Image (cartoon, rainbow, N blue to C red; front, side):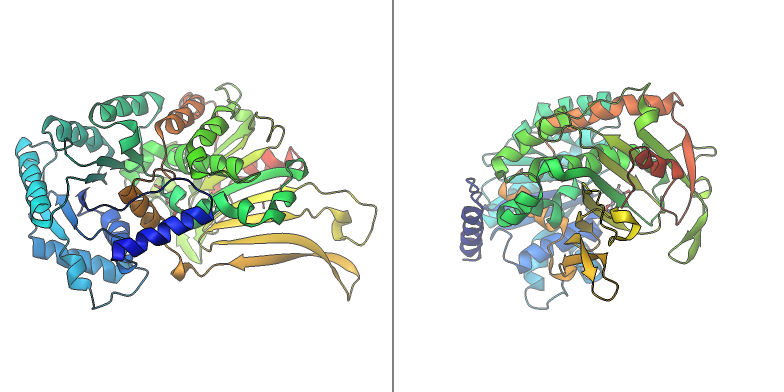
Length: 507
Ligand code: BG6
């Protein structure tokens, strides 16, 4: 019943937005590698629980959690419950909790041990028989990057990926650490799964505002006319964070902001913005259009990188009223590390639509505030009228706030009757984030349905790495200075100068 109503709702939603695809929620086994880890605790269990509350998980549903520890099913279920109480956006409801937890079973697992795969296979099959699940298997890899290849090839060797139903592989980032390693990893994965079965997670694609880009113009024809590209001066994409490297130095001190945030999240935001803003396109077209955008991204050569790219690293300072250490003092960071914790760049998309309109992207840790947003700055008609402060230089802005508060603002100039001068005023629409599905809810739901629209496809990932590769080489060859910036600031001055050289400022 629950599934029927879910499907109806889903199909209605699709028909309303003109999307042709129909996805069906089938009974399935969710095999979770890394079930004792942080992501499972903070995001995946709460996401599954909220989907359960909304009637969006299949009727016959088996979750098999895998981890190195020797946990019993009961202990695992108590851990799942703990995580719901700590991290679910909705309060835990006594009704249905037992039923929800009964879906979960645990299997102690060593990714390099053949016997573990045999036991896993048995458990999957036993549960499939017990619950009447027709061999549909979703393998979710929330594990250290070096284990992704090992697990996938062992699933293949041990026949666990050969099933009468469908099979899907969901992989977390990072997907490789440069072009070559990403290509090698993909080659290995494709020995066990077809491209259409591989769901590469980029959780920025699960953020509701990013997904809303798709229907924004369609639902608001007025926006469509507003977004006449001839009127756009530039597009700015910011992902600023207040957190530092935290306990992740072992990974981050190798990756830096360029691999951690730019190659995936920021380039995905560039693609989503560029493909959706001028027009409404269907879910089916998303993948193809994204590839077109990233293919048209003007390459930045290693030699020229210094003109368009700024990298930085935080020094000690005060963030949100708390004194914090600099990157070099963080636990686990190598002495003298020249890893970037800040990245900004100027990009051009050389296609007829966006030609000549700069995209500025930036991201950094230990900045003054947490904010992910896309700002579209409109051309400012220089005016002779002296009613505008600062000689009429305040441009209109369309601001799409992605995180922490989702919303849209339009900044206009409105005449203040008391002074008879134009002053900037914002029309704001903000959603209540407690009512919003979280990125992982939307992505898990899609992966279970088999809708890959908001996942990163191989061609996009490969083209992103191709674009990034010369920059990595410029970093390694020390061809780009690493600008220090104070924790709690807006980043290095060089990033401001990058825009000032084009007569713009960051918003
Ligand atoms: C992750 C990065 O992918 O995204 C983290 O590894 C970063 O370093 C995080 O903090 C930011 O995500 P969000 O959703 O908080 O903007």
